[in-house]
Each structure stands twice: as C-alpha cells, then as structure tokens.
Length: 68
Image (cartoon, rainbow, N blue to C red; front, side, top):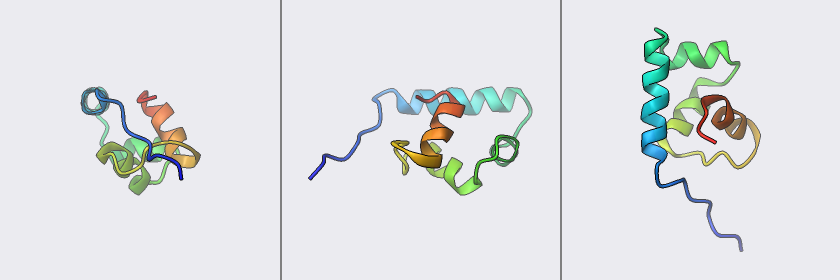
C-alpha cells in the first residue's frame, strides 16, 4: 500500500501568496477559476489542502496556481 502524499511544509505560505496575488489583480477565487477553466470546488479543495495535486485536474490547478 502506498503512503499518502503529504503537502509541502510551506504550503500555507504558498496558498497565502496565491490569494494575495489574485486579490492584487482584483479577482475572487471563483473568477480566477472561471478564467482558468477550473471547477470552483476543485480550486477550493486545493487551497484547503484536501486535494494533493498528484494527477488530473487538481494537479493542473496546482501548477496554474504556482503551488507546484
């Protein structure tokens, strides 16, 4: 059985930087999700740390956010 993937130790700082970056652009998280063709729930789950971004849409979302 595989070990669960852990998030990086500085994950909270990266998420805070992302939130600050989109706020500076005058965007909400929902607007950012729409502009980048991501499901809003996926984006929120990535930001909350529920999705680890190993594959699929969550991985693409991590990359677009600059978290990976």
